[in-house]
Image (cartoon, rainbow, N blue to C red; front, side, top):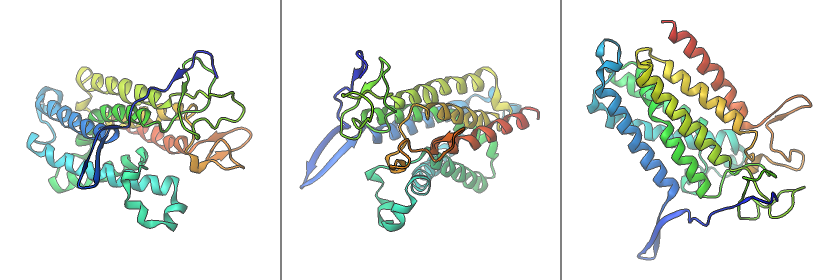
Length: 294
């Protein structure tokens, strides 16, 4: 272990819990992150809609009274898409054998890439029903999303999950638990990259600041689709980078594939997260180039 490694703080994953009639109820930090992230997103969307000068012809793409309906659609997209993405991208064989467990979302198992697809479909459905511009509404959602990612990744850290690969760096974190301490070739206790915090900083804080700057300072809301494109491009780029430090999900690790790569050769190795991020980078960049010229 690196001599100056950081000990994981003793933070309970539950904000509070109580017993009612023999049934245990608890509010976990992860659930609170979803709730607060959605509330912040709603406020950002309402704020942007109230600034008519940010939009072409001073005409926002939807009324503020429609935001509650939009959030409802997005919540469904996040939950259904995130869960289906986790099932199909990461543990399809397991859930084919245990299909009833697909609905046990309280046990964990959500995928950002699946959630993105779910939100995309929910947005298309909402815009079709209300005859709204998909690109302009999508820009709103793109600007409002990073705070939720930031809070979600902080919750991953508190929950002692999705930690990074073993490291000798001085700012590695000693995560508790047998899985976290299973580090062949490293001395005990084993320190790991706090990849959850890397993602919180890059995909949440930095991306969020850039998105607000593009929306408020550069007036990109007048270029429909550009903010969607930049969000998808930048998230894919940041996620691809962090995957070099993030421990692959345990169900991808086998004796023949100890590093959990989806694809590996002498010249190229890709994790599942990197493979899913590459089309995001390509699509996002293409969307920016196409829409910015209009």
